[in-house]
Length: 120
Image (cartoon, rainbow, N blue to C red; front, side, top):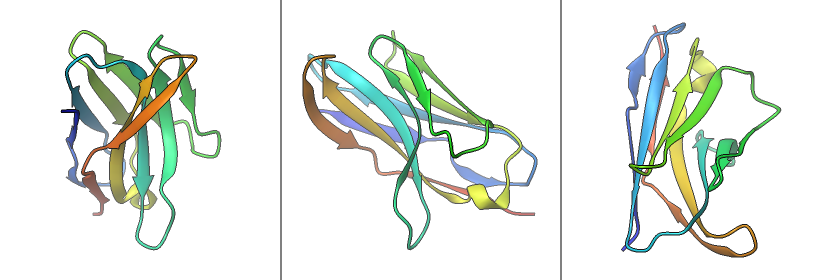
């Protein structure tokens, strides 16, 4: 059974940094990509950044360059570091796993999300 579990959210002050984690597990897992998304109430979930199974990263060009995605391939853990947090970063942050290969898209699995609240 595939599991995607986020952690690391919480209440932080503006200007601080935060690192979110996403642990992925499952038997015989073939990872096409892993990505971080966020969603605020009443708005669509948007992609922040993703990394392919080969390690290629992609960032949402409409977001400021305060996000860094990284992956521990050995442990199947995905990270998102957010620097200089702003109140507008307040959202639920979700991790998404897309199974498959470069040539085939499999299934998408979402975590339950982790709340990040930026407030003084």
